[in-house]
Image 1 (spheres, rainbow, N blue to C red):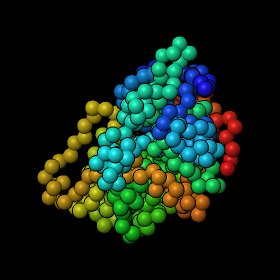
Image 2 (image 1 turned 90 degrees about the vertical axis):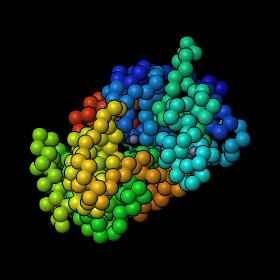
Image 3 (image 1 turned 120 degrees about the vertical axis):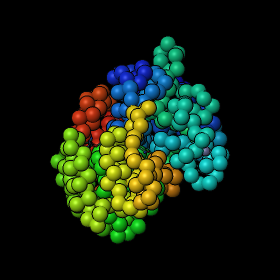
Image 4 (image 1 turned 90 degrees about the horizontal axis):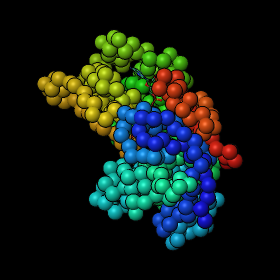
Length: 377
Ligand SMILES: NC(=O)c1ccc[n+]([C@@H]2O[C@H](COP(=O)([O-])OP(=O)(O)OC[C@H]3O[C@@H](n4cnc5c(N)ncnc54)[C@H](O)[C@@H]3O)[C@@H](O)[C@H]2O)c1
Ligand SMILES: [Zn+2]
Ligand SMILES: [Zn+2]
């Protein structure tokens, strides 16, 4: 049965989304049809919207989503129909060397690279029959979507759709960068540069890790204040025109020469360079923010090596979605991970480009597209 769905489509990277009615085909073996309930607006969508990341098109935006299972492909258990789920934007192939090592965040056989299903085709089409891709194979800015079954993670009862959606990207990325990628020991001093959904999740992760000092850095005062309510102990208001003052501010707030760990959660060469420059000997910069394609960063070689400093790239907070999503959901229910405090706006799909404007201006914490009929349970 072919269904009509509403989706935010961009023709190619760099152009605004248009809300279109598309045709969605049935799920095939290894695929699941999900009715979407919530989809967060992450800066990674904005990188595509603004043409900083080239992607094929036309493509349905969105990769931070939650929904309810409506149908399953042949061979999958129909008993899961009606189950609330969160979606992983990196559907693991479960067969490659990295998946077998348990490192699904660097899976080399994922269909997510191709923005299609495992067989390379898509279940989405325009009325004229021309195919439409789904961003990272899940394209969550749509009223419903067919996704790879390995992208679907059952959600713990009692977790609201908005929170489940954020677990699908920002929370797993930020909390996981601290607890999994960097494995920050209790008592460490941590600095976090950039306080969007990802950086604020790093703050929550640093609290759970038992960091002694948590220094937060942003240009926006309101973000610093919000981070303070989540457990940040010191704040530095960044002035992009004066990076030296920002570096000195971080060192002073961290004490003891500087922080043990710095998390960069913006993706600008200038702030990545600040994260590296602020490291005292033996300390680690964890790069979480993603730059526009082709950008490079610079640092001086000798002192970096002489001081045994480290840089780590963190993809998806080293998430194994099937294990980590339920863990983060449980922490939310226990009050240890107050994900709902990150949400500062709920909007209909039609206002997506307005949400991108707010995100580009650095004004948003996390904005969530909510779909009609989404229940609170
Ligand atoms: N590594 C991953 O797996 C992964 C996953 C998701 C997102 N990301 C990336 O993480 C980054 C952050 O995503 P987000 O959705 O939280 O973004 P966001 O736009 O919501 O947050 C960025 C924050 O940085 C602040 N900022 C901007 N310029 C600054 C400057 N010069 N100095 C200090 N603060 C400044 C803004 O005020 C804003 O609060 C993006 O690059 C995104 O693509 C990476
Ligand atoms: Zn994201
Ligand atoms: Zn794999």
